[in-house]
Image (tube, rainbow, N blue to C red; front, top):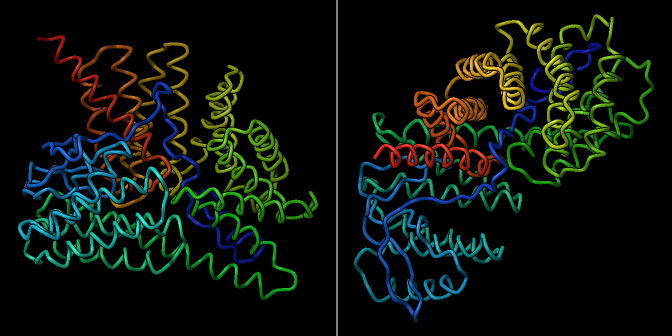
Length: 485
């Protein structure tokens, strides 16, 4: 539960609680601005039927798209990822697609690069119109381009990553496990073709690790559902584990139906279970945490009110119960998070006070070698940063940065939660710059947010927030540079 694998051995039954990201999905919006995924790039303009069509045809130091981040490729990638300046309006896309299709058929030079651009255009149109055929065409174009690209070509790994991203995106919408398997194999090929000393090697490895985790989650969910279907009366632990695994998949892929299924299963476990049942605190906590996540994404006030009630009940029912004593910090952390998000959305200083009290107690009870300590530190750090923004006490921001830095340091590269902690740290430094004007805070904010961007997958539900925070920090640096001139 919440990553602590609560319930794995409670009462001797084997639960299958999975490693959740406990909703620390980088909800650190800095100023409520709408996050916009905008990437930079050079451009050449071709006139097509009166439209200015922006494409990048031949290697203006295009950026490799690496797991959602954008590491500047040292090699010239001859126009790969021209998505950076693919036209944003449908009218332009409707012109550029047939234009590129014709140029591919009639011009033998740079056909591989042009196919990548065509794939980007199809994918851009898919993102605007949600027509599955466009994503199919994008994947087909990328595949043709890769077939024309020799293994020793400097752009081959980045092109493989682009194809893997597209397959992963299609899997997210269709749930076809074959796309996930193919994407994993393609990412492995990209890793194998990338020199060990290349700047993108680590990012490719991170993507591959996350894909393996997604496959593990799908496999676990399939096994759990199979066990439930074969049982006349499914075991309580089985139903709880199924709900929690759906929640884990939602936090990886952002599919609303997964969260609805998580809550449905957890209600099915909680509703008939009496208060004196040994597993009742686990039922209450699991359902409360899932409702908190849905409130974060959907905004229904009733969800967070019910979440807080369930989380308080889980603490009350587990009090004095030896089996739950090791998990008290998890229950406190869950309640603190729910109160914090309630304060963030609806205000009420008493909610912030209550949140910090619970989160401080959670950190105090969490051993230094506990796997969930980084998350508990992250939540407390965020809460103290919010209190600093309200009361302007420098000690709050100082302590916030210390906690968020420790959370990042305790989370190794390759762990899916590291970008979340880095985003929180970057936001705290950015707030410090905005309130105190420290150039060092600004540079540390940019460094943390750029690393978070590079490590977080495109399909992560909080990717747009990380991009927004990174761009805001870079805009702040540009403003400082302009003022100094």
